[in-house]
Image (tube, rainbow, N blue to C red; front, side, top):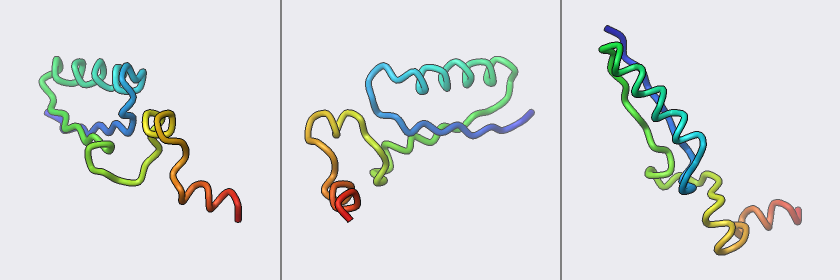
Length: 68
């Protein structure tokens, strides 16, 4: 039996990456292996969020970096 780790960084509804990881996880579990998912968006890390950018624009830090 093997252990796997999966990570998803997208929080966009209908994310292709999240769907793909879910399918891979199902295959891993079907082989009686274990998989642990880490959802990077749930950790409140400063990662890219298309949802937040569309609703509120770029983060101020990204704007300041671009101006520098």
